[in-house]
Structures are given as C-alpha cells and as structure tokens.
Amino acid sequence: EVQLVESGGGLVQPGGSLRLSCAASGFTFSRYWMTWVRQAPGKGLEWVANIKQDGSEKYYVDSVKGRFTISRDNAKNSLYLQMNSLRVEDTAVYYCASGYCSSTSCSRYFDYWGQGTLVTVSS
Amino acid sequence: DIQMTQSPSSVSASVGDRVTITCRASQGISSCLGWYQQKPGKAPKLLIYAASSLVSGVSSRFSGSGSGTDFTLTINSLQPEDFATYHCQQACSFTSLSFGGGTKVEIK
Image (cartoon, each protein chain N blue to C red):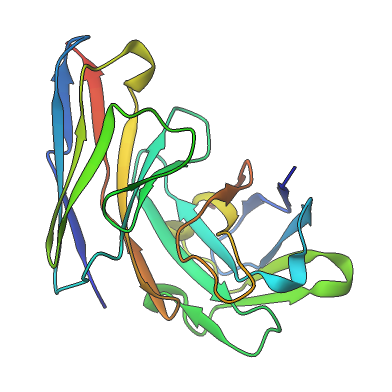
C-alpha cells in the first residue's frame, strides 16, 4: 500500500523558515516524480513544486520561486520542501503527492496523497 | 502559465439530482484534465483523468467530457457520499501544473 506521510509543519513568523518532509513507502520512490500541493484555509488547491525521479529537474509555481526549494533523498525514500522568507499568504496545508508511473512514463495526475501538514505564517 | 477557472463555485442539489461542473482553461490543453473529489479534512481523491477516463473503482455516476479549453464533470443521480468539493487540474506538463478554484456541492 502506498503511503505518504508529511511532517514539519507548524507556526512560523513572517520572514522565517521551515522544512517539510514527506516519508514515502509502498512503492519504488526513486522511479516517481514527486510534487508538493498546498491548500490555503477555505481555498482551492495550488500546485507548488515538482521534482523528477533523479532530482535533475525541478519546477515551481511563480509565487514561491527563489524562496522554496524542493529536494529528495531516494536512499531515504523522502521528499523535502525548504521554505524560506515565508509570507502570511504561504499559510496552508501542504500535501505531498505523486502519480502512477509505468515502466515508460509517469502520470501527471495525482493518485497518491499524504494527509497534509499545516503551515501557519503569522506574527 | 495556464489558468483554470471552475464554475459554479458552489451548487446546491438534492439526492438523485444531476450536477454539472465546468472547468475552462486559459489556453488549449487538449485532453490533459483531471477531476478530484475532496471531503472536509481529507486529501483529494482522483476521479477522472485525461478528461473522460474514469479511475478504477470510481462510481460510474461520475463522467467527464471536453477537450481544448472547456471541460465538464457530471454527477448523475447524486448520492449522499457525493457531497464534497470538486477540483479540476490541468496536467499537460510537469513544468507547470494548475488547479481550478474548486466547486462545493452542497445539500439543498
């Protein structure tokens, strides 16, 4: 069974930093693109960042470019999101997500989700 | 970047009704569209991918259609467990993905 478990959320002041982690199990983590998606309170979903299987490609939504860094450790089956210069508008539940990968391609839809971790940016 | 616009933002319906939700892309995305269901406090669940393909195990009450810029999610014979928020997602490229604003289906 695929499991994604996020951790690292909490309360942080504007301008502060936080590092989120996502522990993966039940699938061959190193073969999958991984993604962070967030959801502000009462709002819709927002794609935040993607990382390729070997970490060679990373993509970000414009609003976090230069502030957030996505990374992964395939030996530890773990995904990370380093968040710096946090703003009030970054307050959200952050989900780790992934789509099914066959031997030849990976889905860009998200079949697998974690339970989310809440990040609150407030003074 | 591709913007996704869902309408309506909320809809009130009764058990047994048919509900239609639309999603419009700011530019053509072929059939690169998915639909998710989300219940309060839970992660989203993928229902439909490639605009009209039903995920295995998802009820046939759900159907999707459309291509290019205009897409539709239809829920036939609404059941109590279908009251939730529905999100569309364009999935054309890993370089930039995006979601619609969501549609809440509420009990009338």
